[in-house]
Length: 114
Image (tube, rainbow, N blue to C red; front, top):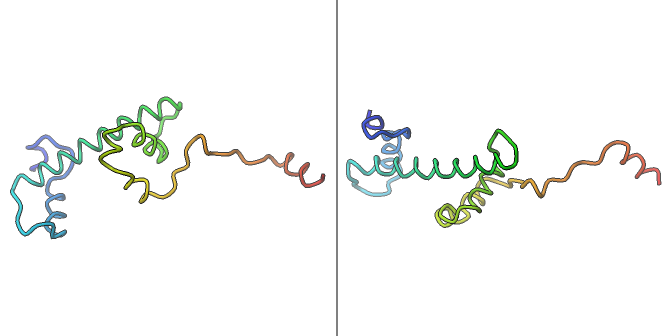
């Protein structure tokens, strides 16, 4: 496949199919989808690398949406590239500092009695 020949993990043929169906241009070079797949793979690798570091610092094994959001805010290159487009479209990712623990039943019952 073209992905393996280029040494990529992202599918070049799928990128080409989306380029053709998207009508971004009437014609494009044969290596355009290869280059675009390589750029997408590079950006994804950088984002997941920074998000993994953020998750490791917060002693968690899984990357959550809040880790991705913090990774974009932390990296100036990713912040400039994405320009808040990810933050608008992915919904509300609650940061660790914004999370509030719910009141326990004892505290709620004491609060209701007084």
